[in-house]
Amino acid sequence: MPTIIAVDRDGHEHRLAVDSGLSLMEVLRDNDMDVMAICGGCCSCATCHVYVDGDWLAALDPQAPDERELVQDSPHFRDGPSRLSCQIRVTDGLDGLRVTLAPED
Image 1: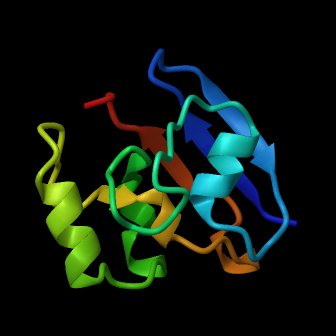
Image 2: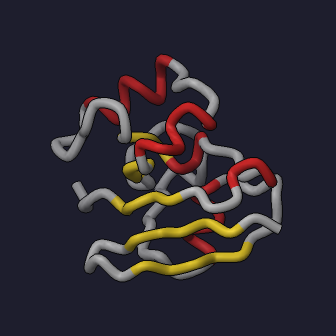
């Protein structure tokens, strides 16, 4: 059971023990982390935008072009760490993954 470290918009760190196989968006939403996830994980909005800690970027699957386009349209986009949490599948290999919620658009 991997643990995800999520930093909320107030800077508070939360350690979330989760089941593998869920999307990171589902993990954040189900743990009341104030992720709107309006599209429900369909990669058609950017309301689940997070910043992935640089040490973890290489462990993630590369961004698909549609995810990249959506996240780039955010005024809070950061090249590299900006990802949509709905596009990150939690696996045992992501135990310790650290993300920070991006500001709301």
